Image 1 (cartoon, rainbow, N blue to C red):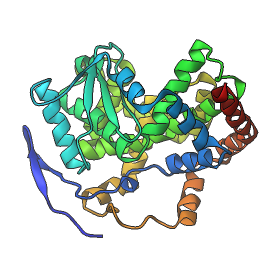
Image 2 (image 1 turned 180 degrees about the horizontal axis):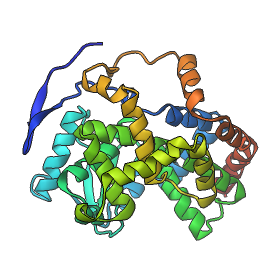
Image 3 (image 1 turned 180 degrees about the vertical axis):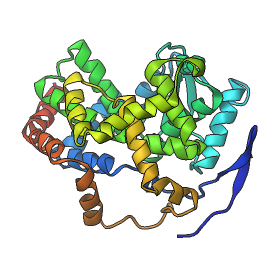
Image 4 (image 1 turned 90 degrees about the vertical axis):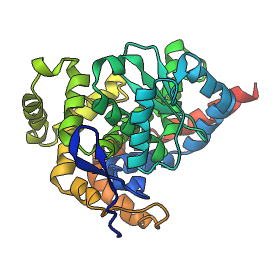
Length: 332
């Protein structure tokens, strides 16, 4: 693999941030993310069901619905945020500048949605809580989702959550099982995007400080990153506890893993040397052939535990019924 030495200075810092030229999303994708998505795609009619659901609403109406109560960010609209976003996209060498919007929403969050035309929504509450470099991490996290082609499934997850809450007829027991599978994958996808966010700002302490702020909402003067990291270490010291937490989250209907767990996962990636290798320029490039499918699944299977795979396997029958029910409903 080639090494890139293109660097640029960061504001107020003598260090430099590496431009990750032509980086492939495989550089940050968690093997559990790939395995969960592979397991979902093996379910009968899974992709067809989701694409049919998307087609039922239509991409443009979905995009407009998400963007209807938000302001498009640009050089003349939220210029400070636009500058942060430009910087993040340049660092990750994003293929293009995906539309970025800010929504008046006090919940500290962001999201990447769409299908063939991805876009990013940043909640205003995030800007109130976080400092600029922390906001840049959040933006890098969302750009990572887009570059990893997560947006279709994330959009479908959000739609199914909303439809299930409204008691929409097509979201019966079987469709809820698919939603549980999507939530299982969604939490693994967050681990991938966390790595992309780190690569976007290349400051592990700043990233973990962001996670601390988003977990507890406190300010720097009243919180301790060292204490938060020690809290995260409890997960790794408890062996398979992380897997048990994921199973509990299935029951709680959570789309994101807990922040403490995410800190633990990110520290593991850093400590194994993967982050430093990427920063040195040792990463897969876009356009390079993907690893053999069998090899990729073998690696992923080691991270995606048997229990989770069995859980998804049990959903195959219900997924088949979902497809049949959806086709019937759409014919009416």
